[in-house]
Length: 303
Image (tube, rainbow, N blue to C red; front, side, top):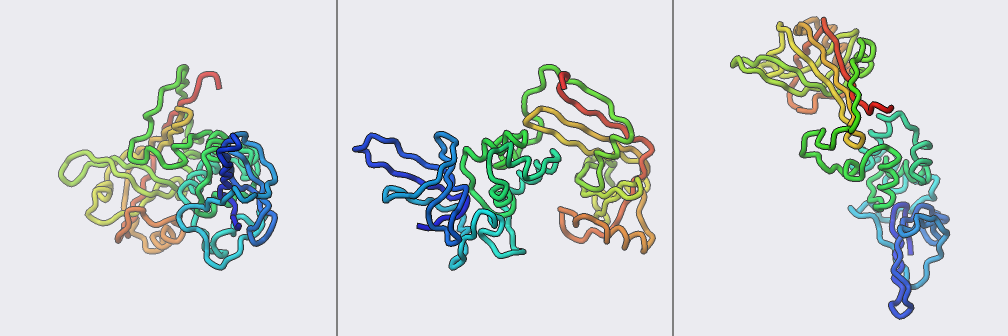
């Protein structure tokens, strides 16, 4: 019997004994080759015990073929490298969402692992490798991150945000300019409101950067977003916390212009945090210099 972190240990007790079937998540390895014994967090009690599996036990491996044939499974302290060679991490969707939510909340891995009652090495493994954590582990992790299991699994990805229930006692607060700049951060995805070539209003999402208080983004010539050039536009970013029914929005209004200086264009391309998600040839940089920067935040009144 061999296992790796995140596998399930299933104990199929014979019916004649009257004992119930048990399963749990393997959260600790004692041998480099993945052989027993294992530290198992049982799904029925949420307790971790050292287990020497008997003949009625079997290991249910992670789904998706994460195992690399011929590769030994390292001990728990090296969980982040348990599946793929160094430099070839391929985190699963759950891990990516968990890591992003943790960073948004300003939590360290150690603090998050403590809240979720799991080993920091196991949390590192979840964030950095493809994994299929148990439902109990997901419930604890979602609670620690202030979100839901459905959100970590990507539920609602095809639906607009904000479909949760409204707060019973909401508090709506205006943000000052410094708070707005902090929420804009250095880059992200926002929406630009323009009048398109056919005279109709349009709102387009773009990847943006903030450079010297200017909001800049690149697009393709003759695109809808390119209609912003040499006009006054509105640019908006926001964030919604579905789990807590809270969020904020920032609105920047000002003139937009095409960046034409070759040195400035090269500088923007070099410092860009990512290429446009839309792909394709997008070499036209547009700069928005806000003359108005406003925002609002909604929270619970008792916070």
